[in-house]
Image 1 (cartoon, rainbow, N blue to C red):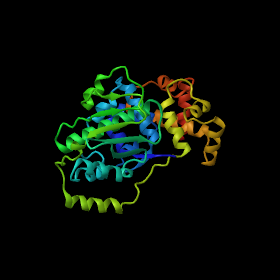
Image 2: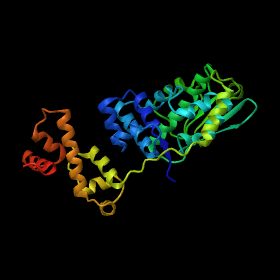
Image 3: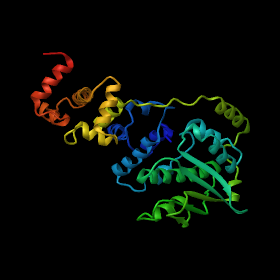
Image 4: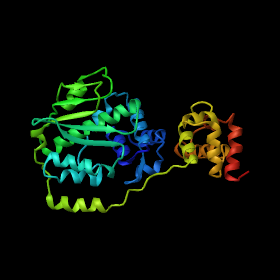
Length: 328
């Protein structure tokens, strides 16, 4: 099952991690997100992009706890209508219920459900339907941290869960999880990813409760069409891969196919179905990289740029530019 998420997640991850400018663009491209998507407010993209982005951000910052840090910044307004459906509810329990009801406004990958365990405690299960490996672990850490942060902000109380459970194996450092959630009962290797709240905390009123506005927003949510979804062609996938791979050794159709988890024969067949070829797409990517580099770094040498895009020497690059521009 292919799941999707609002591009607001990717924007929030990058911004909250302090990544801007060239670093932001590079990581977005490495996660196979076209540049224009980050300027689009309501586009839905494959969940794979966000999972890849978490791994890239962790590697870029060298911080294994970046998802917890980003989760701490989950203030009201980052996720549009979904946030306000939560914040206008009368109590924390009702706000969480509305988050569950309207989750598809921002994601189809995260399942969220609150159920009673006893008179004193209730469990909030967070389930990622798609994803594996480190990307899944980081996305889950963020989801649980974001829920607890939202509970604290909305109630104005320092809500401490009774217990936190993670399916992932135990990390090297345990204390950042204790600091984030405010409990030493953080279990790893559990059968589910889960927050256990005190029932009394779920009954806390929300500071932003507004029944009249909540009714209006509920009607708006019910009438909304599904947000547009980004569909990337195979040629688009190749361009995104080449943006990452050019300048990192010799780029071949076999290498790009491996990057895209397919075979070179299948990749070339897909490109042919779209009326293009591997050679044409490689040429197009080289042209885009060269022209962008000349704009950003006018002092760059032809020889250095030729090596960057995989030409043997400056003469080969010069002939290619003549072909691209039609000039002699």
